[in-house]
Image: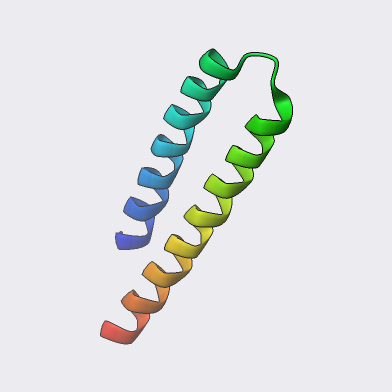
Length: 58
């Protein structure tokens, strides 16, 4: 359940950032790709650390 909660939070935040970036950036796809890649990598690191924390504590 803990892992699902982390994944849901990452998806919601990612969608919000993606929506805001599309409205603000418009046709600037290179910057949008950099921001999206940064968000995905950060979310994956957060998810991996959350999984490791969950496994070590239980």
